[in-house]
Length: 206
Image (cartoon, rainbow, N blue to C red; front, side, top):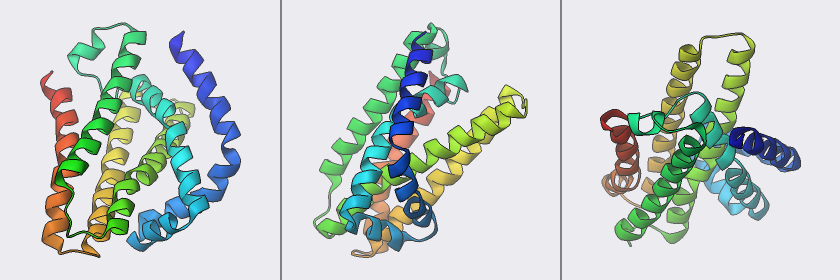
């Protein structure tokens, strides 16, 4: 029941966001190809605002996709009923957001230019939006083709890994544009690898 309500709500929100999505989508795709496009996107007030709104609207569809296809299903989650599972997944995502914010505040280096730091920090919103859109498209296409659930899950995990890797590369390039590669790499490890490692560890161990 909760899934159906959230799915319908997400559909309505996405339809309302369609014009913004069409406008910002080319810039999102460009960010995959070149690090400089991330800086250009942040320099545009309208594009960056539309990207931020889009990333917020993608939170519910992302959680629904993760739950439906079992992308995050440690034993403590799979033992709960559907509604509790959705709440746990949303809670984990919220915890990751809070952890990233805290780590960003703790490890923020004065050696990195403020505008560059802001651009690098907000790049996650760009890639999160892209990831959610691609996962939704993947799920729809493969489900329409009657692909096995395990095949859909595997494809989504590989897609997630690929987009995350590109995100790490682009973020490193953005940070290293105003500091040394070593500083950028250390910052990346602290801000991105720790939260991601925590999620992977919880999925495997718990």
